[in-house]
Image 1 (tube, rainbow, N blue to C red):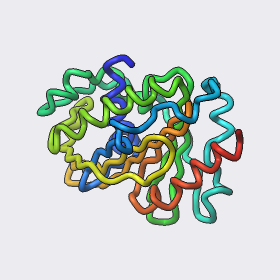
Image 2 (image 1 turned 180 degrees about the vertical axis):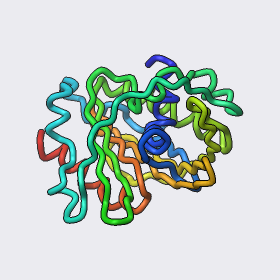
Image 3 (image 1 turned 45 degrees about the horizontal axis):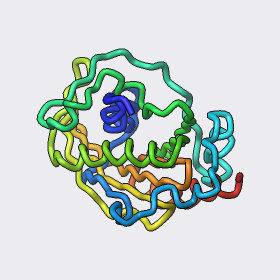
Length: 230
């Protein structure tokens, strides 16, 4: 994966917050793959499953019906071209931030959706990516490792400076590999906590981000959509 993918993940939640209103997690944490040393990467791909197309991924995204009453799908927002830089985290600085405001990872096959919930305006978003299992594993693992190496750092997007804290948290034992983190961002006197959990199941990577309670409540549904559609 190209270097800017890492910072894209860092800001996948921030982009909506800073530019439109997304989220980050307080107690920021980056998870690690389930026993990465022993986890049999691609074990579910033994039959040589091919990556899914973006169109196929789109059909597997969560819907309002999956989530339940009170959820409203958010409209896609135009991409912002503000320069993004990372300060105080060499691992992330090395990976770069030029494409971070795109709000998605650098895999060619992808689909994304976001929802708000109730009067509180809490948010949850889902991103699906598909590629060879080892590419998903190596790319996302590199990103989460970089984020975990810096418990505190700063992200500057345009004229907005965001104070970040990250912390690794335990991911649920799902799929072949798992990562999870809590991110806390502070900007303009506002403090927001966002949870971000990534699960690789075969040649598909699922990332659910947003309010911690909503992420925990809907992660299983997101994985179920992928498996039921196969």
